Amino acid sequence: MLLASRMARLGTEKGFEVLARARQLEAEGKEIIHLEVGEPDFDTPEHIRRAACEAINSGHTHYGPPAGDSQLRAVVADHIKKTRGADYAPEHIVIVPGGKPVIFLGMIALVEAGDEVIYSNPGYPTFESMSNFLGATPVPIILREENEFRLDVNELADLVTDKTSLIVLNSPHNPTGSVLTRDGLEAVAHIAIENDIMVLSDETYESIIYEGQQHSIAAFDGMAERTLLLDCFSKSFAMTGWRLGFSASNTQLAEALTRLMLNANSCTNSFVQRAGIAALCGPMDETRKMVAAFKQRRDIIVEGLNSIPGISCLYPHGAFYAFPNIAGTGYSSDELFSRLLDEAGVALLPGTAFGEYGEGYLRISYANSLDNIREALSRISRLLS
Image (cartoon, rainbow, N blue to C red; front, side, top):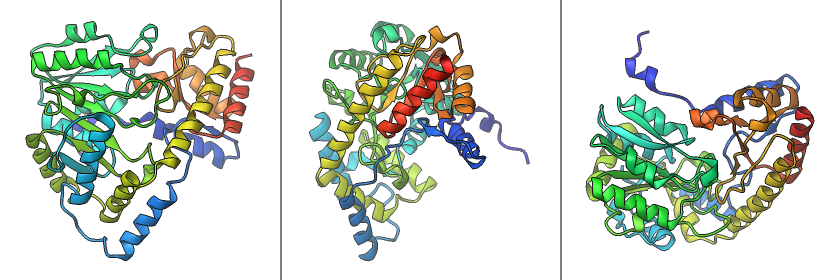
């Protein structure tokens, strides 16, 4: 079978590959501590699950509008206003099955072959993969530890050319846990407006923040219509398997995304959308408890990593990932990742899973119990000693 040549340019996601490898080791009898996949280890809150069951029983099992349930779109627009201060109307919202379709469909709508896409490296690998897939040139902006893994606005300005069609932001950031400041975002907004560039703002971890305040570039003057805002229910409400996300953008782009949705998926699951309404309109107690638990785990894992010779780790301000520097161990990222999985039974990810500038780091998801985190730290320490 001969596949289209563009398929060779489409990458994969290392986390799922490592999960499969870890499951195979478990099948062979090895005990594995899973710190590789970015998935909350909490159950979806009960009121959300109940809303989905009620929706099924009341007949929300048929096709819906390609752009999404009108009530959910209105709720999302209100949610964005309350949490980001950005003004979007319901017709600017498109409901999609998860967060990734916003990247996939959004970049199809915005990026031409020959364009340049500026994205963070290390960063979520789908942005680089999709740029290559579309025949564009991915242009990395390096996130450096000495800048707390925040992008350097001066470097960003230097990377912009007349071929730049898209700047990708992700805050709170996967894999580093960094959070962009208001001043930094304002400077990026100035660059985007001055150069007439669209911004894809990945705000998947918007509610998982420990210090400071979450800001969205869409809230700055002139940026709501220039931003493709991405968010989903997976992390904030422990709904990874439900596959529910949304975009907010200008009218023209929202209409384009709706056409793409119609051709790719027809619509998003109807009863899952009713659960989404319950998530955004219901109590946030469980989300707050989850974030408090993540903060406690963050403090323990970072303190533990910093106590291991050869490893140093900054405190992430958001998401649920630690990104320790392992340069002092003498191992490359891939070497230490492999030894930890095969010999110590600790599944995590090499920094290189998030781009070439992730070399010298590991990504550790602390979406696991305190007991497992402490045991993982002990195993890492024993292997390195």
